[in-house]
Length: 184
Image (tube, rainbow, N blue to C red; front, side, top):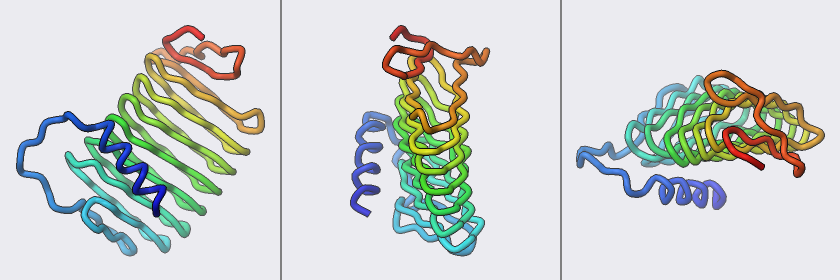
């Protein structure tokens, strides 16, 4: 719980400076059995078909216990997908997306976002410019990055990295990183 709150604070600081129309919702919209929100801090558990819409507010969504989750925010989305959950998400600038254990993730995020796939998770990430992606453990990653994006894949992970709209392979650096739209 402390890690999630820290990640949400980081995401909100990253997204700070964006304007507001003054008509902000008081809570995320969360539907499906096992889906609950306390403001913009949401949980999805127990095999539910959980959909969380945070609109123009930054929010956090934890998906656990084999749940099926879908989270979206125009601002930073902090999504944590664990256990054997299946997660989809679409976050704004500064999102932090984490998939662990044996989860399956299909996630998109805008600029300066961070995505982590570890353990035996299967991840498909589509990330904006300036983003960082980490594939760790025995994870399986299908990664799409735009300009100035960096992917770091462990030797034990399976990674496919494509860059830009044309899907070029990117540049593999001596330290093992794959960079898109930048030199090592």
